[in-house]
Length: 341
Image (tube, rainbow, N blue to C red; front, top):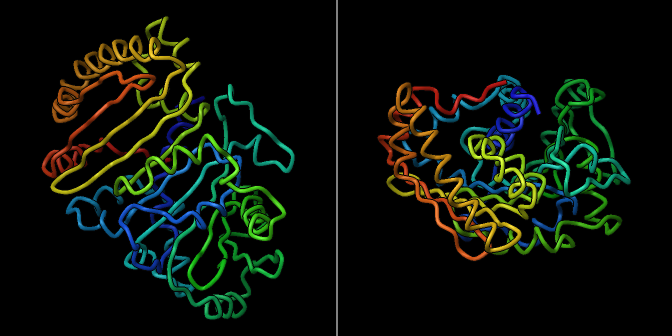
């Protein structure tokens, strides 16, 4: 995968944090209900959640959002605001999933051994919405819409472009957004015509494990785990023996908690305990190399990596990172998180 493709994928996951608004107060911070999870397609390869209400209490969050958000989604924010949806102050919870392009087709099934080369996105914001006012605005402005089983899908763009995004109101408390094909599949799941994420035993079990564990959490299947390793720890794959271990990785669980700073926990699930032990050693060496290269241009990043811990635990490799508010502010100032397209 080209670096520009990798940046686009990484940016997409962050950009959706500000797509839609008007979410209700969560009953439990960082926890998502099973009925919401059930609406997502079965073939989601990466599933994530963000508690934006808590994230906004962090003093550095606006600057981070500004740094990571691509221009196209800024335009989408303005578009939503003009339709009566405030994307900056009302979002409190958001869940989204990524589906490999090959698996997004009607009968497509992506191989678990394939690293995704392209993908589509689908997500849900929870809240209190006024669908009638939005529909009235679209009619008045003669903007593109589409119909599916009685639902009105509102287009951002012409409504016919392959990358055009849509959103619709599942009901007055849920709004869905993403690519049209996946939104239509979500509607079919709601009517029982398609299988949802609850039928994906491997991914759903991981979701149950991490659900409620932090301000941001995510689970990745085997293919997205390999993609994440290539993006987040490219130094590891410089070791010949690491390539085989990465190819046999099963999944990854990510959770981030926040108080006076951030605590990140990455759990890479390997095929066997022996693999986890070996990969742990290689990842420790990779972090040392990355720390050395980063220390010259970005000492704060080097210090962060120096504080990271890597430990094997059964079939898993657990990586922990701690970032203080001051460190986060410094990293943002140096454009550490600038992944714009």
